[in-house]
Image 1: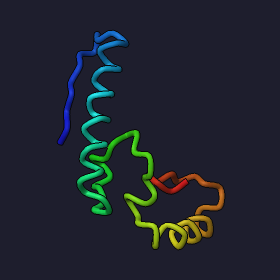
Image 2: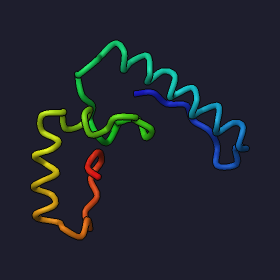
Image 3: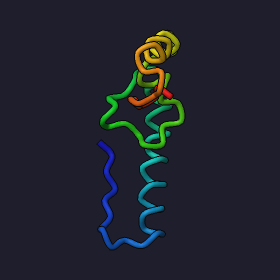
Length: 82
């Protein structure tokens, strides 16, 4: 797990620094683990490709068809399924 804590009273600069640190580490890990997936509850909030990472390119379109059939009003929002 990558954790860069900051206090509830942290200023904007401290928070931005924490997020930049985590994102830079995750970018490095993503390059090392191409195609390995992620556990959604511990995934990067700013993951650039959640659909592929969480569900896999082969599964995404099928899952979207099922979701649109079951949830046509898009009430249920799942990570990577938009």
